[in-house]
Length: 133
Length: 157
Image (tube, rainbow over all chains, first blue to last red; front, side, top):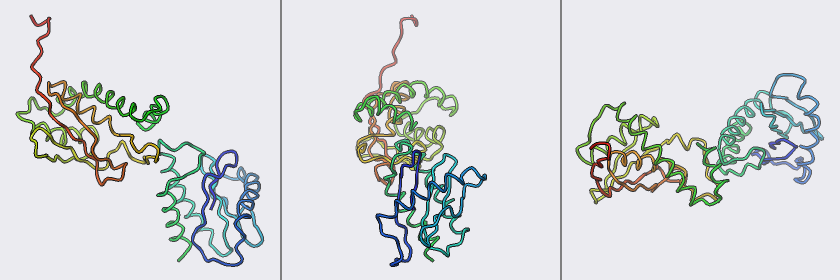
């Protein structure tokens, strides 16, 4: 999962619980994959009014799904095939709520890295609940 | 309130100074707030410190912050604490490590001190515990220093 702010600055990234597999791309490629997907996302962003953009790009056989918030913060999720759109959509909606709570913190500066441990823990539990049944 | 505190930190740079300034601001608010409080609560005078403490915690906090507070007494009968949870001022706030000495809710300490000052009770207040710092509840300790005599102003002659 990567959360990208203005100027394509990654303000949060995390590996969410899921099946570990040899098919997973190596860590140093993950950022590159997400950034490439950002370009595809930018093309699609104004094509409709939905915040949930579904799949915007694919790397090898791994889709990148995206969600754009009202403030144009982008959530990018690189995942394996087979996860329902609906599950991803609810995950992103819940993530949006968590992001809003961080944004409401007067000590958090917009577009800076999210360092809150409680945010990290909550995202992790959220992912576990949604993707790791 | 959060924007105010963060702006003050930016302006003063020093957390200790911000704490003091918040208390001062609270004091000035309290000096005036007491009139609104007494008018709305419909009480005239407290007979003793116990009643004062009760009104602050049970009526004042409810009226202005919408929360219920408890009073706890120390062995010294001139000192009590107002304990509360779910302080609306700190909703969504997470204190960064570098500001761990910031007494974010210090404004409330000042308000209590200012309000009591207006009714001739000179007290000191201190934020003893804070939910922002990981404590289970927030606690403001109030210590009575003296009951000031009614000041007669020149116009009263």
